[in-house]
Image (cartoon, rainbow over all chains, first blue to last red; front, top):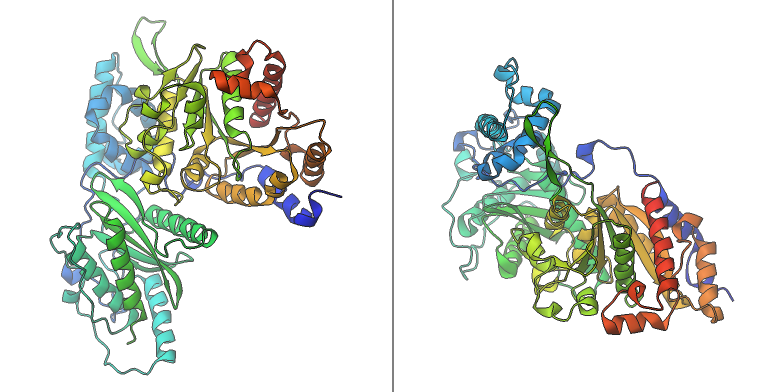
Length: 331
Length: 275
């Protein structure tokens, strides 16, 4: 008797095996791992604190005429330059790298430093000079490089609005509107509170969340900032559609999706596992991304919140519960 | 250190970094007790004998490599300490062996569970940093003995590795778990498209036991030819005796036969990786 055939689907197994043996797809270097990149060192170094939009620039949910004011995404090499600028003590080690990078990546650095494009190459004859020149170069680049973290000047993302509108219309279909719509004014949004101690045992505030979907989420965002000292957050659905994005960093969103999906699979595989895992990644010296998957009537939603440090399982549960409550609230 | 000072022809001293590209090979399986540690130790020994600077990393929280080769492994810092604290200098984790080209990093005092293990991706960046540090130390090959199951730190190791070898015990039950393993590896390749699957390595093969031979043959019939490594690891009392002495089988007096097996295996894996 064949020791295998009755126990497995031979065709399926063979298909899986052939898939594994297939040569890797030709992909651009940066696309190999969109989550980190080859030399991802976190976003430490420099001021990685999100700079928040002024209240007047903040989102007004019901103002579709406002246009997005967003800077273009920063290329990875700029972030690296900034990170490396902070490691002057290692300048000698990195001197050669810098010189080589400068030559190889001339075009991209020129983008960052257009006024230096015509600067003649400096002939370096000793390692110490290489180190000094390298440190000067990265400092000058770093001075002009924006932090990858910044809050969108206008949270009224078209894509996010479309998603939120979709959610709102679903709610309209399933509920009778009993409360009048809350029009969220600029002063309601994106207000930075001084971070409160995260390790406090006090439960976070309960929201009286009513109104359109997006405005409820923004109220939730504000509470998490004020009560837990969060720096910024984003909320996406399982397909990566953005519902709220105060971070504007595609890599972090990718990391959050990967973590959340892996966690969900692991939960499914192990009976009795906690519904909400404690998923966090250190992304900078004082920044940790907490990834909190929440099951809702819209399917799995993934919340990514940037805190100064990990907040612990109890807090994660509280945030997850509050988000769930906020989502499930009706208009 | 992977870095050398060169004197250029015009007499100007320049610093040139000569980085050897580190090949990282994870020894992983979904199922426990299939001989991952034995394969790891002896494969690392085969690479080291070839003159390759080899680092054998114990990424199994049970610390099987350390327990096999060092007496005080429980008190040594190791891989999981580096994962818990990325500033932990790798040179403080490396234990030299009598074979100059072979060094070991034990599992350490911290464990996967203390790191909040279970979720994939938690320690991926630090695993990558660890490999980068190993590369900077001038190692050519890094063999990683992982814990059973493809999740937690093992998944992060696979997400950062060059290649993976999957030992599988030559018996029907073990072979039936292969589909699960293939599914998990498929997920790993999504995260790490460059992960080279060297293939399933049949271990504990007993030529005198019909079921064992049939299991090997059935798997060869089932999977594409390249998916099952040609070399197999026989069941041999010598492995137990070597383990008792804390040695790779290849250094045992009667170990010439097994040494040849692992030498052939090394050559086959090298050929697969370099394809």
